[in-house]
Length: 267
Ligand SMILES: Nc1ncnc2c1ncn2[C@@H]1O[C@H](COP(=O)(O)OP(=O)(O)OP(=O)(O)O)[C@@H](O)[C@H]1O
Ligand SMILES: [Mg+2]
Image 1: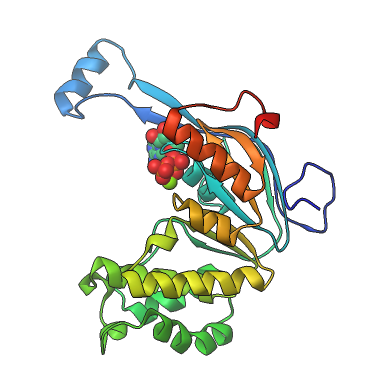
Image 2 (image 1 turned 90 degrees about the vertical axis):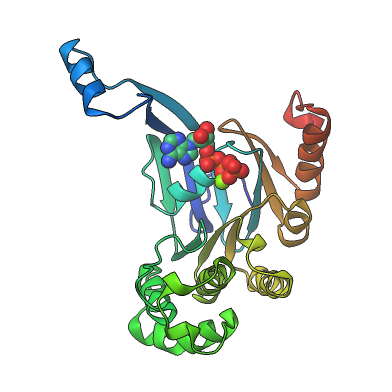
């Protein structure tokens, strides 16, 4: 059974996306100065905006327990899609239904409060992921141990961390919160070589635990190894969906020779 399908089954679904479109409105005024604002007002103009359609009419169904990789060029709409599934970004039109508790690692440590310690951020992360205080307390030490920071750092404000240390805590929080649904956007590239290996192994464990996982990554070999399904996003559209190796192979061909498949069947 394909893990991503277009059928109408409902209770097995972790995520259902129907005709989802997301646009950003960008203010194109070159300089935001008072003078410009007054000039514009005197001409009766409003702020000029440009609309970027980051995700266009996307339909996707993800069953519980599937591990889905999302590939695509920079600006294809992958992070936008992830943010909307996480509930951070409301759809411009269409509908997203999520069935389960989500833990996200969208951009590393987004949502962390830099004035608080690593430990306090772990607690906040847990609350945000819908865990109870008791569940979080039971996990805090394990998470701190996974992040494996230098002596004492876990109780220091996060602003005193190096980038790598920050990423380690963020990754540790996301993968140890026992979420039903885990969203990882470029998280596998966190930390140094040793930590990368540790995160990859943890990812493999999670994949085997039958959790629903969405992974955005430019590391195509990781997608092939971890995922049981992949989708290719291109300029806001879902260009293809299928076996990871087929999808990453076609995407790689596109990256190398600029060739897009003319239809799904070409893959
Ligand atoms: N906050 C924002 N405001 C305005 N436009 C945005 C914003 N975030 C993304 N965009 C635009 O939306 C489109 C999709 O961006 P998105 O970040 O989803 O791409 P991506 O596939 O994640 O790319 P990457 O591989 O570089 O991470 C791009 O054209 C981008 O410029
Ligand atoms: Mg992105």
